[in-house]
Image (tube, rainbow, N blue to C red; front, top):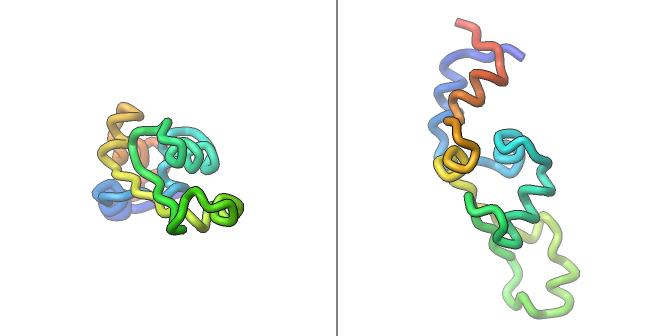
Length: 97
């Protein structure tokens, strides 16, 4: 896929990443990232349940992907992966001048 240099620059300066973007950057599936953030095993972001009482039986049943908010900071994922998000995008896409 061909993209412009300005698109790469704009994407690489985002403060937060989506689950999809973080999963691609880490090289894992989206579910891996979701569960890793929900359980605290992945330290580059946080997952917060949207429901009020986490111990409530019904709340646990509803705890699907739509019932969680994710905060994934780009700089933390860059430290985890070991390269900049910009470099990752440049390697992934063909840059057109």
